[in-house]
Length: 187
Image (cartoon, rainbow, N blue to C red; front, side, top):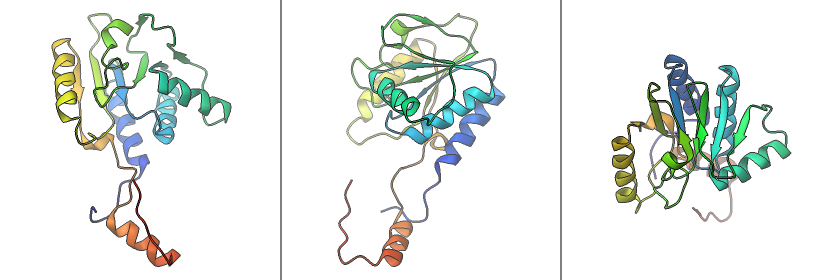
């Protein structure tokens, strides 16, 4: 489909690291797909590097983090998983990872004001580390408007997300090397 080559996940992690380092006295809330284990691992490594606590909001993230811990994919204990839906106080010493980047009802992101207390003096940044799934454009736009009205700074730039799908050139290279008898693309 897309020409060229897809960026590696390291590209996203490097960009997240850079913005967090440059704005170390601000709170970062990162919304991404809970199934993206490599990105979650990278965010944990950033938190570890800057000695920040990870706060997890969202049931699917709870399962992903349990999986990563159980399989020794992360080595960091300063992680708070909010399974009780209680209000958590967060500061510039935290990185919050939250579900709901597609505007899902009742997700961590749509309920963020119920789940987080952030002192007024702290700038609150929400990084959308995801792409828009077609059909969700209106829900996501409405969510972003609500978040802006509540005082969140929205950061939505393609440097914070890469596709997990191969580009046309990469698919051609794969076919060339594997020489399959049949090729059926599946999404």
